[in-house]
Length: 367
Ligand code: ZN
Image 1 (cartoon, rainbow, N blue to C red):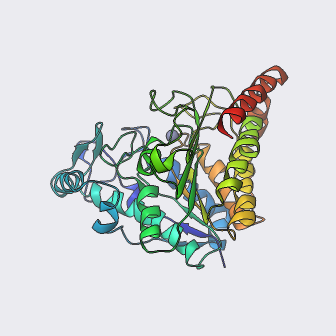
Image 2: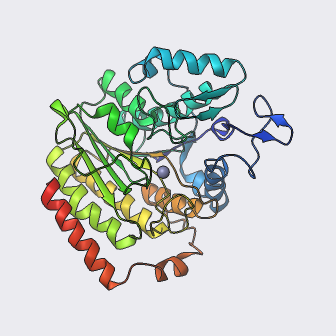
């Protein structure tokens, strides 16, 4: 069995609030790379291109999927929101939620993005693939059930996990979000639930500025099943590994998931324009190895990653390639040309001590 790699060119054509030269986007008019929102197709397309150029893509089970159904969507999002989104999308596009723009056909692109996440999770749960990576776009982890925000139009992982639970493929899922921003949407979908553990590792008060507090641990049946790990800016490789080892892994062992899903953002990287952390391609590779070892120990290797943020066109491809090489056990390496520079920028010993102290405080509070 191979690693499944889900992608679709149509997801790269999602765009909003912009024009291609003088024409509004939509139909056969593609978004341009030079304008529009920081969430643009280039980071994702260049990741897929790098996989192609190194030959790693040919080792993967590379495919697309169907869109999620209206029934799938309704498990997470209210009908009024979906109907409004669909009507605007069928016309000339528009905006929903906190000013999240989309073009004509944006509804179908978002439903396809969620479909890639669903197929990633289903292909693993149905033993069709060893593990899976969904190159979903638009991203999903900020989208609340009734409020799209932060470039996210639908809750990709929320919809996919709910579909898997509804079809009785699983009844106990752990979601680990290592995108640098708080996974507020995924948290909201499962906040009162004990069957889905949500963990978010993020730069504190980066986005949204008023969520992601360590004291937000879930409510009702879900109390203790939401874990926020807000990190001060400037943390790098060591900090991320320490977080996994000392906070995430012990919580996973206690929860005993049936499957692990990762909200995989690359915006904690040392060069990302939207955050201030210092992770490298090695960091993402090691995080993936941690997740694979946890999945091996706890849930028969069942692991799926779903793409979220990451806004450096030059660096996301190397981080993503490293993750997918790790996932698939490939020997094909895309040597990271930025490694020397970003390794040199890591926190010094004094800061490392500070971060270790912080992790101890977090540990005492959370575990
Ligand atoms: Zn992000």
